[in-house]
Length: 247
Image (cartoon, rainbow, N blue to C red; front, side, top):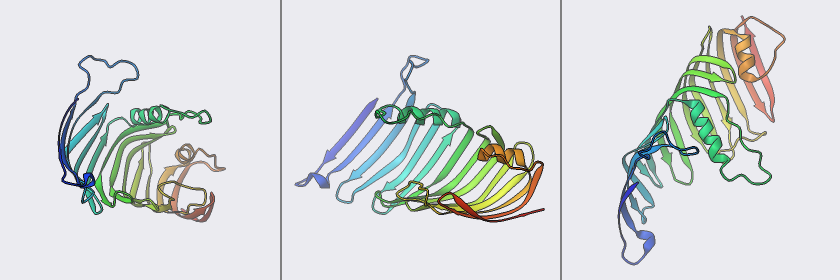
């Protein structure tokens, strides 16, 4: 790892201006040792303490098979472009579980990797303030596997803030047959989903196997076959209400 940095300020260090260039290279010995994660990347950032802003030149980080590219500004009026490419979602969820288990408390149950597979790409922007950012962009996933259910394609527009998330123009295609078009939203409390958080869903289902839905929802329904129709649902405190029109 190589770091080049310059900083200057006059009387107040909180008004410091700094410029840094960080170059990260994974160890030359391959494969990496156990519990080592290969990291590569370049980060260019200019910091302005008086404006409380960090301006990123084109910066890139690669962790195993996941690559993050940043370009723009984080500040009181952020405008940061984000491009995230995860070629192996199972690897990414395993890494996330490893990080969460790095310093577990005595009462904390170790997190288990979620059974999620496929390749994902997100491109979007971070706006708002650093204390309360907003994330807007497009997510696409290929060859998605969730808890044993298999899906050829997922596409959805995301608009996320600390108070809630909206899902727009969503499309989910089964690996076997059938598809779902959907829109929805859920409330959050400081980025956390709570039992009392409201949840809404509007979906159009076409020739989708009930077995696929059962695997996705980890539930069993007293019907078999294929499902086509419309779903309009609202939920709070895990108590859903709404209508289903099948055909």
